[in-house]
Each structure stands twice: as C-alpha cells, then as structure tokens.
Image (cartoon, rainbow, N blue to C red; front, side, top):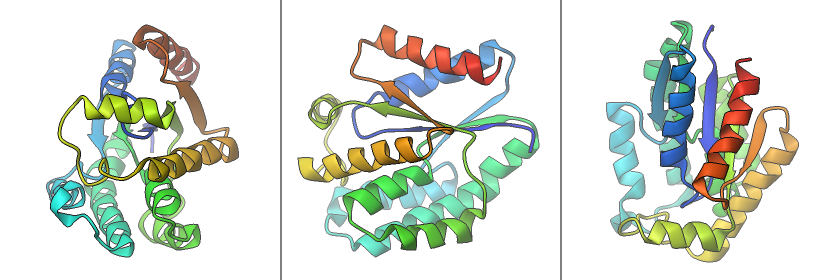
Length: 206
C-alpha cells in the first residue's frame, strides 16, 4: 500500500467535522490525493447500518448487537473504500475507525476489549492507521457543543458518565500507542487547534 491511512477520533463536540476538512485541505495543498470517509458508514451498506446505529428509536440496543453492526460496516468499508484507495496511492482520511469501537463499545458499554480485539483481527488482520489524531475536550464542553447542533442521536442521549468512560478510553489508547497517536487540545480556539494540526501534518509528509 502506497497511501497513508489517517484517522480522526474524539467524543461528541470536539470539532471533528470542521477539523477533518482542514486536514484534507492541508494535504491537498501539498499535492496529495485524499479520500475522505467516515465510520460507521463510507459505503451504501455502511451508511444504512449507520442509520440504524444512530436512530434514537433503537435506544436500548444490545451492546453486542451494536458491536457487531460496527464491525459489519467496517468490513464493507475496508473492502470497498479504504484498501482500494490506499492501493491506488491515495491517502485516506477517516472520521473514526476501530479505536472508536474500543472507546465507545469497550469503554462506554463495558464490553471486554478481548472480544473487540478478536473481531478486529477477523476484519482487519494487522491493518492499523498510520496516524490517529485525537481531538480532546472535557466531556462537559463537548456535550455542550453537540447540544447546539441538532437533536441528539442514540449515542448523544447517553449520560455524562458514559462519555467520561469513552474519553478516558481514548486517552488510555493515546498513552499506549504514543507512536501512532497525536493528542490535540480541541478546547482551544479553532485557530489554535488548527495550528496544532498543521504542525503534526508538516512532520508527517516532510
């Protein structure tokens, strides 16, 4: 694979949509072909699964059902979008990936990470991102931002302690996989957040 696989992670309200577009623009300004995608989703089948996962009418979905739907969408995403793009030399910029599963279904829902790891191996083998940008804000800040956007989806309806566990799982992964992760303080003004991102991206393709 000639391209690079970059993931952007974080809880609700960290500014992923705005900042992932900024990263895309940075890369394209340097002549890099970028495929922008997201999880769950990225394919017609994946987007249909995403709609199920986010639909508030399915509040109370069994956590193991949720976990398997995430990996079902991911298997299709890898086969149809991510791997083909990388093989063609494109860089893939993905809004969330498997680390989100460890954070939300592992940290948030309390599913044994060993179970998640087995599904990860089944679906991905040894495939991992080249770089993960973790946009981090305190939970209360992120939820306040998210509440200003739209009606809450099924995940956004969770209580604060759920998101505290999710955030901590992300921070734990950032510490464990420090060669892959770059921690971005997204509580700062947007200009300062994007300065952090620009610094990271300059080192990546220097």
